[in-house]
Every structure is written in C-alpha cells, then in structure tokens.
Amino acid sequence: MLSTVYCAGLNGIDGFEVTVECSAQKKMEAFDIVGLPDAAVKEAKNRVRTACENSGFRFPDILLTVNLAPAARRKEGAGFDCAILTAILRCAHYIPETVDMEDKCFIGELSLSGALRPVPGALPLAIAAAEAGRKELFIAAENAMEASVAEGITVYPCESITDIVRHLRGERMLEPVSFDKNAFFSAPPKNVPDLSDVMGQERAKRALEIAAAGGHNIIFIGPPGSGKSMLAKRLPGILPDLTYGESLESTKVYSVAGLLGNNETLLRSRPFRSPHHTMSAPSLVGGGQIPRPGEISLAHNGVLFLDEFPEFSKAATEALRQPLEDGQVTVARVQGRVRYPSRFMLVCAMNPFKFGFFGHPTKAFTCRTDDIKRYLAKISGPLADRIDIQIEVPSVTYGEMTSDKRGETSAEVRKRVNAARKRALERFREQGITDVFCNADITPTHIRTVCKVDEGGSRLLEMSFEKMGLSARGYDRILRVARTIADLDGSDIIGARHVAEAVQLRSLDRQYFNL
Image (tube, rainbow, N blue to C red):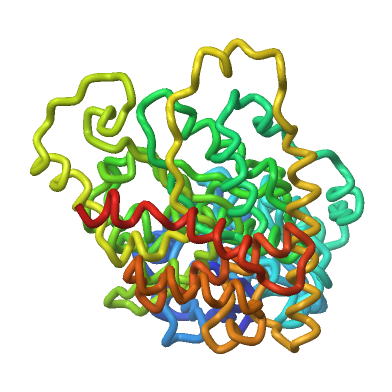
C-alpha cells in the first residue's frame, strides 16, 4: 500500500512543501527514510516507532519505505515526525482510506509518548502549506496561534498523535484556532522608553528625529554617561508603527530563529537588537552548520544598536557593509545557500577614545595621538561612509540635569516622523517608485529625480563636496539626509538650510575617522 501525506520544510525564512510518501510491503521488517534527510530526520525512525507504540497503536511488522519529496532538497529538523507517523498509520489502516488527505498538512516533532512538540518556523511553514493549496493544518498546540496568521488555511492545535487520529476518524473533532488581524493591531503596543526621559541633548534628539524620519544610520560619539545609550533605546518609540507586511516579515525571522514564545502570533513593535561587542561575525550576520538568522536579520524592519562600536571585531563590523547596502544577507554553505532579509537602521555609540574622555572639555586626557589613531582605526573609512548621520553627544550640564523643563515626548516626535514618512511615500508613488520605503533607501537611479535642490542648496553642496573631500557615496548620503530634513520641514524642494543641516550632521569624518 502507498500512503501520501503532506508536510513542509524550511529554506531560510521561507517554507516549501514536502510530500511524505510511505510504501508498505509484506516483506521482511525494515524501516527506511530517504529523500536527503539530515541526522535529525534519520533519527525520526526511533522516535516514530516508540511514539506509535506508546500511543496505543501497533507498529506494523512490514517493510516501510518513507520518501520525502522533492528528494534533491535537503530536509532538516524534527518537524517531519508527525507527517511520517500519520502516513504509516494510514498504511496500517488506523486511519480510514476514505479520508481525503490531499488538503491536509501535518507538522510537528514527536515525543516518545506520542505528544506533539513545537517546531521553529511554524509561520513560514504554514504559509508554504497554504500556498501549496492545503486547507487544513495539524500542528502542535504551542505553534497553533503563530500558524493561524497564515491566510487561507484552517489550523488545528494538537496535543498528541492520538488527537489527530481521532479527528480523522471522526471520533473527537478538534477545534480550530483563528487570528483576528484587526483586534491584534488595535491593541496598544508594549511600553517603550520615552524620549522625554533624556535630559538636555537637544541637538542629539534632533538628529535622532531626522534618522527616524528617513531611516538613516546614525552614530553617537561622546564621553561616558552623556546619554548615548539612552537615546538609542528610545529610537523605536519614535519610529512609525509596523505595517502588517513588515510585521509578517519580521515575525518569520523570529519564528525561524525559535525566538517566538508559545502561543505568540505577530510582532507588534519594531525589533530592537543590542548585541554585546564580544560576539562573532557569524553571530552578527547569520550562519552556523545549519544556517540561522543573525542579529542583523533579527533587527529587520527595526534597529540594530552597536554600543562600544570600536570594540566589535574587525570581521564583524566589516561584515555589515554589504547588508547595509543590499538590505539582505546571503549565507553560503556546502549544502546550499540561504538568504535572510536585513533592512535595519544601524545605530552606533562610541567613546572618543578607549578610556572615554578624548575631547572632553574638563576632564584630563594624557593619551598619545598614536593610541587614539589605533582606537579609531578600528572603524574603517568605507563603513563610516555608510553611516549617514554623525553626531557628538557632550556631557550633560548640571543645569540640564536639575531643570524641571521636560523635553518632547516620543508621541509628539512620532507625529512629525509619520508625517515626513507619509510625504516621502506619496512622492515615491507619484514617480512610480515601488521598491523604496524611506529616504535612506533611495537608489542612485532615482536620487536626482527625488532630491530636487534649489540654486542656493546646489552651491552649498558643491562647496561642501570640494572642502570635505566627499566620496560619491558620501555626497548621495548628504543629499538623502537633506531630503529628509526638507520633508520634516514640509518642503518639496531641498533648500540651502536643509543642505546646511545635513552637512553639519556629516562633519565628524575628518575629526574622528581621518586623524
């Protein structure tokens, strides 16, 4: 007898359908799994046999051959257990042949008791099943809410393989779960730190607002205790809310990485990742023997904050260059390559020197110039060139610390950021640009048409280009920042004052990165 059921596997953050074919023949007892399985899939033989017997079903004493198609595509993980055992139970007639299996998908790891355990990547797996035309998905109860986000498929939460068999027999029907998109996004987001908590630092706050409005990368340079980390941690509070599409993309990354909690659905707030400076390059960009998303992909549609920026290894910081340009990273391994999205805002913070007080107006500093150069040389010119906004954060004065005056709240700043983003998106739509979502992503192809500069602004740009020795990339980035400043100002044309502010936000190259 031949039994066919359906499952799904992962490739990067996308799923693909897997057809599980089980052939049962009355020959000498044997059990083989073919179809390019990894070690975890090969071990399914022992899990499936024991789970079957502990669930009250007799494992058939015949020749069983299970094929996972397409056979040329590598299958990884234990998520195929449920489909394999379901196919075997159908061959053993525990599941009636009259049950239509064409519209059903089975995903889950089996414990030795027959209970279904959750697997990473439930959301992309469910989406793959729905796109393949499956109408019903049977999955571990802990994964059910996450999988229910997929449209066009009914999700049944299952505690064990016995639940599935009883449902298919019609003995005890499972209750499906559903996801209410409107109710989810109408709920208030989680609390995030408010910008009004930061005392003083008005110039740095303005730079942070510009960065949020245009999606620009930013670096804060200043002595310890000046508020660099506080500012960075308050950036998510002034960014626009996640759209449904952005939330779906980011949730798929977290799902594959196994970072979604049980019974979670979609991410509601923008990711904020702050890895320690001792992390390796593969941990930052992704990798491993079985590739998994790195920090830059976990920060997709959100913020990647690198504190103590020069303390990160050279390999790690230089690995950021390509993802910052392309918005994605490709991890190549012997078994193949996977692509992860990595469109994020890079926020860096650093002291002017290893001990923190180089350039401080009052604290003594006696280190040698060669030591300063060696410290700052850890940040390469090409990487610094990709950071749009560079801002000094001086120490807070006593008057600012004791003042009763409160700064603007994150909600007030977010209104201006949303207005500027809306203005930019309308401009992109009018000009037929569909692959750009913020000013930082404007391509060289479109920059001349999107960034219209008046005569005064053009003269100032020319003077800045010659005096600062800008590269072509640096010139384009100043133009993009000026475009954002003009959007915050409600202007369609970039004027001299917009260019002047953009140049000021790019003036630390020579002071810090070209000593």
